[in-house]
Image 1 (tube, rainbow, N blue to C red):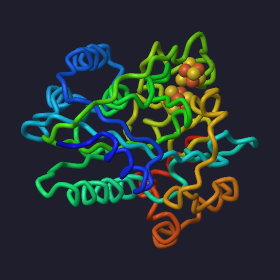
Image 2 (cartoon, rainbow, N blue to C red; image 1 turned 180 degrees about the vertical axis):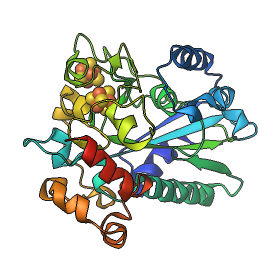
Image 3 (cartoon, rainbow, N blue to C red; image 1 turned 30 degrees about the vertical axis):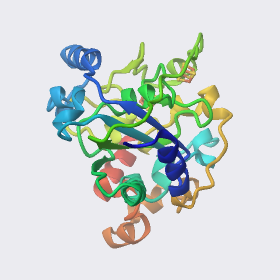
Length: 303
Ligand code: SF4
Ligand code: SF4
């Protein structure tokens, strides 16, 4: 049997800023919401969202007999997270200024599991960082980490939405579980809705056909292109204005220290980068997922 206090202590030792533990349950309401959202066309051409919807709602389809989801968060706010003060054609979301979180968080989760196994040799689990269909934000809420904000991201009281999430799913039971926060959440605030340059934020969900983050990273093809407003990878506009993010401290964890500053890059520098230079300077960042050609296309579109 896992112990809640041990999990949280070990997660802290591994370097996570937040950790909560939720009981696995059927997330039927979230499944129904996702289906309705897709039916209304808000997913656009993001076809991967249409796959494995039932799996998302049922953690036992990822781990046989799953009982427990450990949700860990690493805060990553940096100076760029507050927004770009100058007009720029090469804006990059602040989470992408550092080593790709898929790698960082996965390594940290593996280390957490290794330490849990040292406590109990029978411990077995799977770790996920965007690598499986799982309603991770819902589990983060269930685990008491925060609430879903109006812009559909997880908001944590201390670090806002500038957190990177990862999950450990196990069939082991825990001696007790966290519960959702008792909070007013966003209250009357609508700053993110008002700040979105494309009006993509609906009431607690996003129209991805209007979202710059999707347009610069995931979406391809004609017919669904929205204005990019100077962004070439991701978009932080709705997060920079959030009062919870404004008061969040800049992260000090070595895993999330920025390795470049987009303000120091001109459009001409981006456009003249060779594949080799891109790989050597940005190959470890999340931008390598989009690739240099895509970034240059985005730059041309963001004129
Ligand atoms: S990421 Fe940008 S485009 Fe997408 S909802 Fe937020 S502000 Fe709007
Ligand atoms: S900006 Fe306001 S409404 Fe939007 S997520 Fe933050 S607190 Fe909620």
